Image (tube, rainbow, N blue to C red; front, side):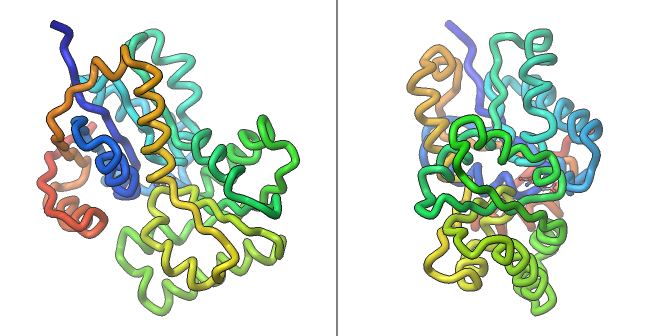
Length: 274
Ligand code: DGL
């Protein structure tokens, strides 16, 4: 009988938990392993080479744990490492395994979500400076007008739970004002960082009811479900006991407390460092 394994979900920190939550809702029988590289997060301001190196280490670790499929639930890693891992590393490491990212599926949904043709992208410095979203959207929606803004303070604010403090709220409002000042017609904003769904309600309140705020978790979950329906050979390699195992490069006590906040449930992580 073929051996089966869990779906690996990777993020630099806690943000990928917003994707994991949506994945588990859509695929409740599948097993998952989450790895957060919390000890080395945030990745947002790190160089291309460093993000690639760290992401590759995480993918190798998840493969060693028996995951035939790994989702990079991190825009920064998807922007800076996914293509090289898919094209250069995967054929040598594990040619039958797959590594998927969050950029293409999110870009496709963003195109559908806008009526004005003007969309906003919010992300880390790494994601925004890579221009990954405008480049991806240009391939299938060349008429779309894309406006971007990097919010380097948001991940630290969220990870330290300071986003609801008045100073945190001020940073968030200022960043949104900078994005919206670029074009009044923006009617859809993609939260192109998996941490940002924590701020969804705050953002909606600031931008008002005419602007759609689009989180990535449900998008990635829906696309993964469709992918597994189309790739039954991969789905057959995935174990299905409805379990989830958490690993963090940070001390488990710290991870458990913060992850519990993101997930709304108790978490017992194991430690893994490189
Ligand atoms: N959650 C990650 C993303 O989607 C970024 C967080 C970080 O800066 O490490 O880009």
